[in-house]
Image (cartoon, rainbow, N blue to C red; front, top):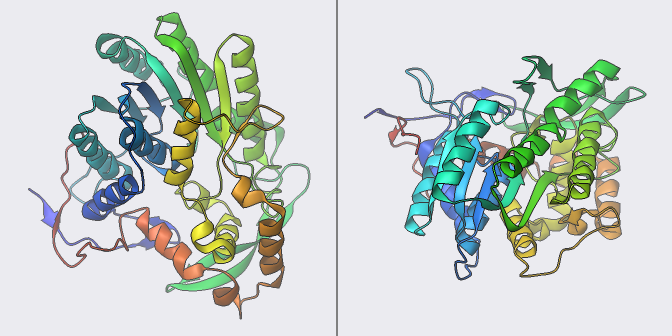
Length: 389
């Protein structure tokens, strides 16, 4: 047993430790947002199941439709000096939740890009489930080692074509600071490497590996989660190096569909995630969006419920002209975007705490690590040596 009091120490939006009890409570809170349906014994493989939309999709699937299956993520175990990563603790609690629901859902802590991971995961799928009905791909990684070439690729957050300057949100001693951040232009090699990391190649490899082993059940479908976002964040996101990777992801869906696989991308709405908080301008944008919408901002688990309803046929697919599932219409409506733009343009250091919901955003970032969660005693020692399920 290794109990200790854990404090939120770190720099910027990165924390050195995570709070196990807070992470566990978040999983319970997410599950509590889901209205349950009668279990149908569907089997799902979720790649990137420990955080963000991948976590929300896993919990929504378990709580609403009682999915069986496997979640794959890559998290760090606790050490003598540091706690485990937040995703480690969230996964441990998600496993407890799955058991309480009476579901057979397993978790792998491994590099999703590795062929050895695919072999091990697909071996268990063949042994326990005989195949999968759904593959959810939700991977946001800074780098990737291609196991077939042993080449390492590094993703970049840069503009394409011309440099860009954006407003961005930071904090000093807990107080919001409005900054101007310059974004460099990505080289062709940096764009290509970002596509290699965050594009659709690995998603296609998972689908191919399942198909080659005969593990695609009748009616199988697969979605890769993506984001488009606002014109305000477009130069650094959708029109930047990350956007090139997202475009590749969407083209992969088209290619897979031509091969007879029911493959789509799901365009989710804005959310506070560990991946998005690192992108300049996104924090300010989401803070403004929450200020405009309040409770009208749809959470990742609410969107994930809508996704499962569409994937299972409970509701019709909400597709755009390019065949993408759209879960972000609430965000990109003209009136919402006009209101957010007005706040963005009026934001100054003097009024930033008024025009944007900066306190909410900082609390949401801290919640990613298990802090600022109601009902958790942060003065009490908590067990940090939690076993991977």
